[in-house]
Image (cartoon, rainbow, N blue to C red; front, side):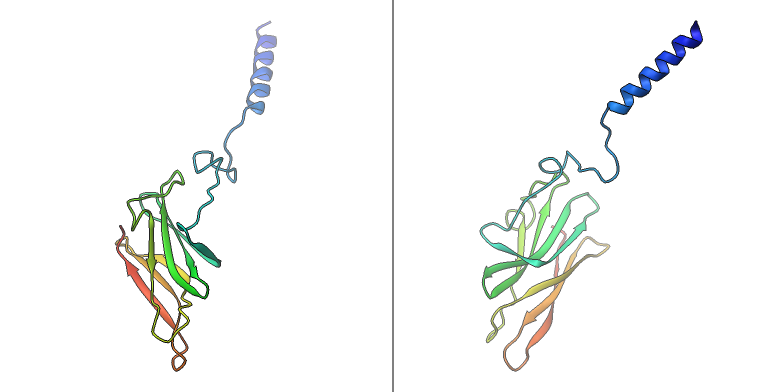
Length: 148
């Protein structure tokens, strides 16, 4: 009789646990944004969608870098920081965003972020293509931001 009870209990437990929902690798994280997704953009500006960079700081905050479309063809390097839950970290830059403007004289101001890296000291390095005047053409633009 005890063996039958144990078998029924084990079978019931396996049915119960197989119908429960457990987080698995690859599932959306319900603690991030709305059901695991965040939709965002720079305040009042469009994002240059050709390249978006992502880095995680040691405290779990996420850096999202791209170019912002200030006024086509004027683009600038942009970085925003998100909290681990996906909300904008308003303690970073100005209300969670930081822009680097190269805008060299005689250029069309088309500066496009290509890469972003975190240094071991927490500083943020941005690199991309910056438009020069007609005599210099495009150049590399490099900027380094403090961690905050």
